[in-house]
Amino acid sequence: HAVTMLTSVTDKALQIHGGRGYWKDHPMERVYRDARAQRFEEGTNEVQKAVVFRELLRGTAPAAAGAGR
Image (cartoon, one colour):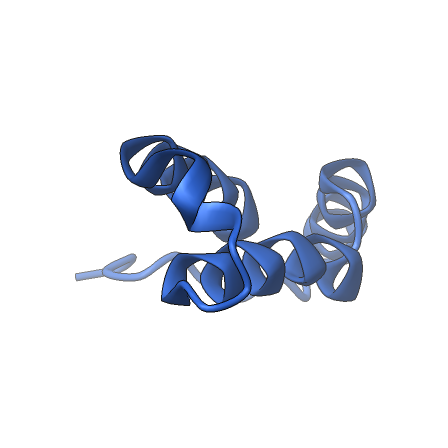
């Protein structure tokens, strides 16, 4: 979910900057490129969902933040 949100926010920021955001000398170009690359490093959403589902079935998924309080 974090990579999906990162991509969404970065896409919106790039729209704010317009075409200049794609230029190599603009910092937004690097942010956008890094965000897109993150999708490949972390795997597709489908792969991540499968990993979480498998861990839930095994009972090895980390507890949700604040669970058991």
